[in-house]
Image 1 (cartoon, one colour):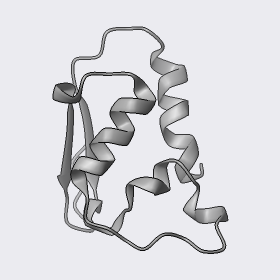
Image 2 (tube, rainbow, N blue to C red; image 1 turned 180 degrees about the vertical axis):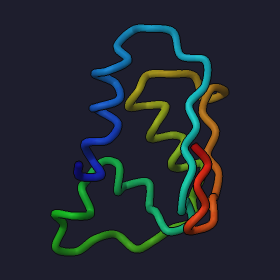
Image 3 (spheres, rainbow, N blue to C red; image 1 turned 90 degrees about the vertical axis):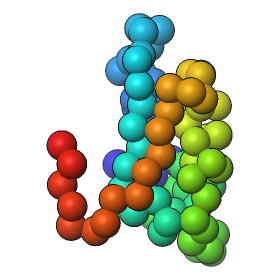
Image 4 (cartoon, rainbow, N blue to C red; image 1 turned 90 degrees about the horizontal axis):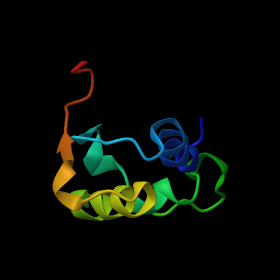
Length: 83
């Protein structure tokens, strides 16, 4: 799945159902929030990496239509399995 397809796929699965919490975890410091809007995998000139957890939260909230307080964004070291 391309990076810009992740949030729309989640939205399609969840629909209008109640969501208690959204956890965005991974190599957050290596992502630019724009990767979630424009697929880095198909881009000729990908935006630079940017450590912007609040920017990622803003894109997730806007795309999924959820409250910001329900979205956590956290860095997880490479190779760490959390779930």
